[in-house]
Image (cartoon, rainbow, N blue to C red; front, side, top):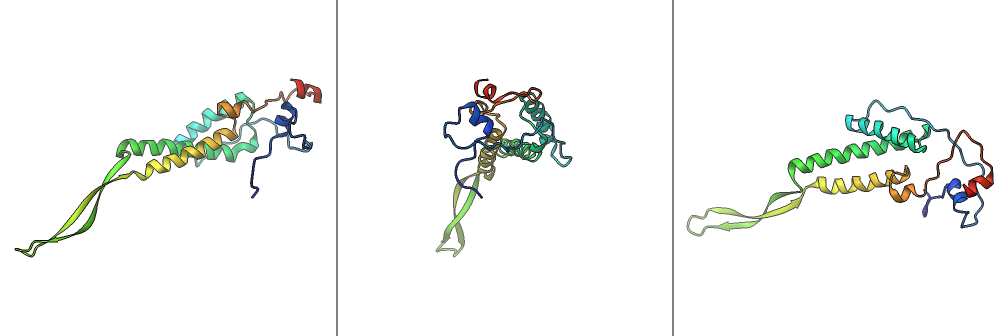
Length: 170
């Protein structure tokens, strides 16, 4: 697995004037826009997200048939976030737990009683939600669905052939 920064797409290098002056990938795949088939096994919430996102990404001009698996993960993570929010809403962000810290012996009756300590613990769903949020943001960035990521996305008109000068200067 490669370590370090992600490779900048050739189209983005062209728009920014190739600031690193590295050779451009002239053989980078150019995929036609298209909507991947929605997997039947998605949860109802993930299916609803799929329908909204495919329309949005199609309108943005960034969705191709090759994006199906990444879009599936994005929808799954979004569904997971909604489920975790429901769980936290139902059971709270914290819960109480009893920890036994010792025993007391009544000297008169010789009765043993446990000494307990009440603890407040975080609902595990809170950490799970934080993790899902991180994964969700990563997928949003991949699809150009955050303001900063969107500023780096270049949409080209697939119907018109442009020469290199047009790609540099718009």
